[in-house]
Amino acid sequence: MLHIFCAPARYIQGRQATRVLAEEMRKLGLSPPALIIASASPRKLLESVWIETFKAVDFAFDVLPFSGECSLEEIARGKQKATQMGARCVVGVGGGKALDTARAVASELALPVVCCPTTAASDAPCSALSIVYTEAGVFEKCLFYKRNPDLVLVDSSVIIRAPVRYLIAGMGDALATWFEADTAQRAHKPNAMGGASTIAAAALSALCYRTLLNDGRAAVAAAHAGAITPAFERIVEANTLLSGLGFESGGLAVAHSVHNGLTAAPETHAYLHGEKVAFGTLVQLVLEGRDSAQVEEVMQFCHAVGLPITLQALGIAALTRDTARAIATRATAIGETAHNEPFVVTVDAVMDALYAADAWGQAFQSAQ
Image (cartoon, rainbow, N blue to C red; front, side, top):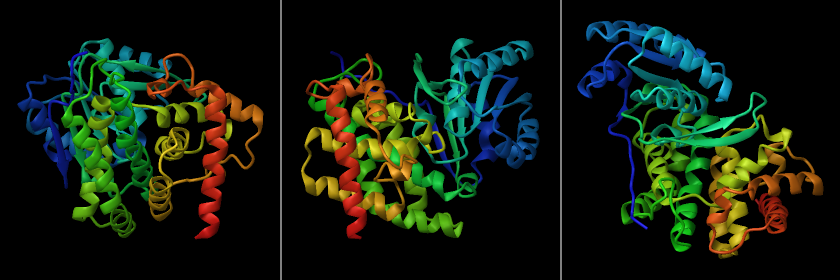
């Protein structure tokens, strides 16, 4: 198995980064017109900047309002709009689902794509895949692409204006990075490109985890104050770049499969991707029989920054056997990354780990 590492062609992060978006697109050889797929709030905040700065470099664009769900229907709508206007590149602006939609539209039309996240809520922006849901918000499938985005541009001045919950959720998504990559590598399982991991991916995954532990609490405090600090910038980078490179080139395991399983429980639909991944990480650690000190370290981190460590914190007040089985069945479906563990993962084992992780989380919370 060949060792494969992937990454976006260029990553830019900092204050007022949106002002150089069109200029950077020109530098990379992208051609107008651009279709910008944008959520409502980012559009309201940034459209005047787009008009000014895109005009300055003679880069025409049109905007398609994002409906809120990365579904096959929304992807088809974006593809139709891009075809009608003769788009030569696609720009996604918004949260993870808006960016997933933009990548899917660009891939189907073989166009360059730019990702401009407006929250640091997930590691989606840098990746060469999209997570597709039904219109009702239930996980449906993953779409994999031939290449990563041509540009990922992260405007810290925009990220700081997002609800702090999104930054915290991004840390939940990033929390799984090192544990899943470490598991997949030890099991000699392929990464998202079907290749073996690299030492670069392993190092980035470990750095991601250390950055969360070192800067997580300070970044949350800064975000509550509306202040862009070095700790805040490092956590934005960890959530977006380090986690993105680490999960895709390192590999996934049970944590993200449990997230997918949790979408089968309607009670969890109001919760963010990273919030469910954080609990999925605890389930993975329990399932793997990791050292209790390591589990406690992860729980302490989650508790300190506000990530869920119980099912009740994800809307499931009492986990019935039927719901647990539905979650575990979805998490262990054929093709799920739960099977990247170095042992056979069964429905019953995941069910037991769900109950055990929840009980451990409840006990930890009671002791605080």
